[in-house]
Length: 405
Image (cartoon, rainbow, N blue to C red; front, side, top):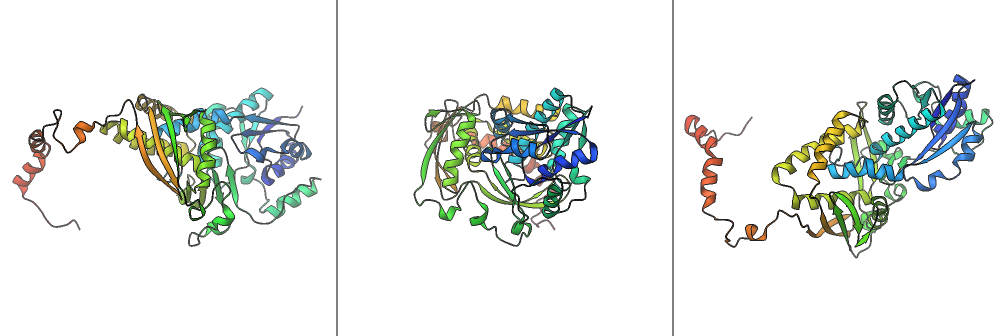
């Protein structure tokens, strides 16, 4: 009886070529698994393609709600952004995909899992760390680190030699990854950071800001304990809010970023990311937090956000540290409830007002007008104590006015 292997299958050229390669080199029974995280029309025709290529069966796993509720929302609440720009679209999706691969592998009694990630990218790390954390007994097969196929032309030829005729062309195109949160683009002119992105050719979810409508559009988002609950007064699930915001944000050129990022494997890479709905959601959540969280909590939370983002980027979702960070974040979200109004205009998100029953902003205290809760004279004693160490040092050593060299 043949051993079974579960293949993370997208239906693209790489994972299609992997099916006959696995059978030829390992004599595995190949079970394909495509995990739906919101890639939409990319799922069409997959079963026929997988079986035509030699797979014994195909699972299409609906993980959209799990992805949104258990992975995206924790990152939104954390404010997790990698290197100040990347909203972790691909990074967040890989753990849930790998988790579903493990579940199918255990159900089928498979002995190995295979993925189509290259030997230069982050995804190999993310897939394999998750598999190691959830099923250390399973073998991992990574064809891109093993086979001799070096180009799309060679992959197409290999498929043809194995009786697989598929609608793939050898032309160069962008490497893309899509889910409900974002769409990423790499390759072609983007590999040269001195060149501007050809946005008219690249963008699929959005329009360039300069081609967005001349009239801005105001929206409102409501949150309860850091979780989005309604859009423009209409209660909706987080997944449906993201879908609706993708349309609105795309229309107004929101969330298009051109990034040179530091990959886990040590190299820099450039990509263009479209995250229209995610950018709006993150900004709205941040605006609500600035009204509610106290100074010390907000300061520490920003530090945790950077560390949280790095963990997710590196594929360390299923670790005690990520759980500990998330526990801290969940405590900070207890009172992050309220409504945020925003105007979307030519790539910009413009504040239109924020309200919360738990706001720490007190107009009587903040106003320039003297009120009962704040006595201007109290500031003198505070400043004397706050600056005491600086004053003592100056008295002891004098003040050095020379700039540092």
